Length: 172
Image 1 (tube, rainbow, N blue to C red):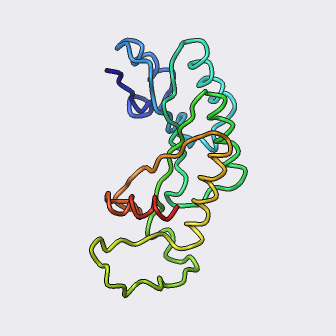
Image 2: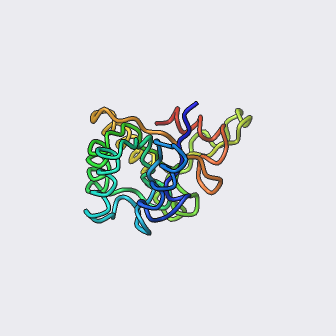
């Protein structure tokens, strides 16, 4: 069995997290933050540290948790930066959220035409059309870069349950 951990769950300092991992013979980790900084805003020195861990210390980044689509939409620059980081760290999996419901309350969204549909079995809401379009674009761009995208469920988002996650996957 191979065990992977989330590096910042051990320590916000990547060097410390990697030392603890090494002490326990762990080699695989999800990268979510570098220090107190989200990956999309991390400085070059942090990125070099992560790259050295992969290239010289033989650690493997199993997933990059982008933090995208939690309470904001990623910019084109942030998206490009994540794609470049994934390639730099030899990681082909990026995770995204399903957007916090209160983060899009003010978004321009038309009410669902199917709102009164008879199929109330799952009672699932999807993010507003602009958010869905941004997610679709992100997933399409990732696929073009030969990267995979995983949904990261969170109770405060539109994918807080399995039914909601499945509905969003179908919509994307």
